[in-house]
Image 1 (cartoon, rainbow, N blue to C red):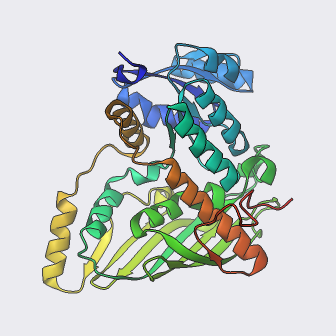
Image 2: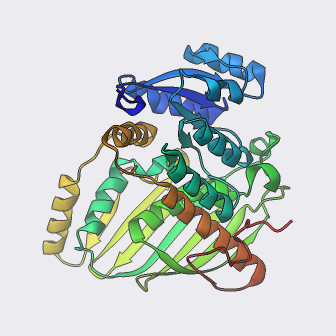
Length: 363
């Protein structure tokens, strides 16, 4: 029996912050028949000990020891962003399958290195975009895929959240060297992924970014204008200075408008319900509601993505979220930075000839 045919995958958590806790409590704990979270490690030994005690797992002294262990099948990387690339590459070299938090890495060149390394290794890497695994977004995805909406015209996406001094008191946050970017990398990345997943490839990007809310290096306000590959247009707005937190998605099609507006504590749940669908005629409204009602809905959030991870390994099929998805996410960020800093319109895809292929930040 191969490693991937085992019923339970043995997981080690790398980095013991709040994201790692969320992965266990909202993901792995719901799938104990598929996963055994067995170990953890962190550069902060006291935090690792506390995390291990809380979740009843083994604390291992160092990432190298975890990679050397035959008792670990999968590593889930929850460290600061600047550490992701080296850890993913080392895990593949050690023969481990990998789950990695966003943002995946700091440049398209490094992203392409991971894609190539995965192909060579025979192991698998899944980037985390758990917002896709929510019942509302699954239904809207099915509605758009049906073709009933007609041609897309224009879309608007707004991420208006709040982050202040307490958030940036964590030493690695707010710095390009460790966080890699601000609102575009850490907060709106999830909402922009949902938008691109629903609406398809982006052809061109223009935009602006600035830092106005906090005394930090990275951006905390940004806007972008997009031309999609299908010819429709879109606007993206993001800020960390909204005293009332909200997320808004509005998709205008030939035959209907699709909207989601969530506020306050629900601002981080844009994929959930209710979504508002307004069709041009009663007949179209009835058809749309039938599609929404029939759309398959699986587990939510981390649990949904981790279930897909286990199923895909067992079935030898692609993950629902792939490294190509992570690359497209970083490609949009690269284009937003370049457009904001040069005033140019950036055409996608971005290849190795582009001046930002080696990273969106010029230092």
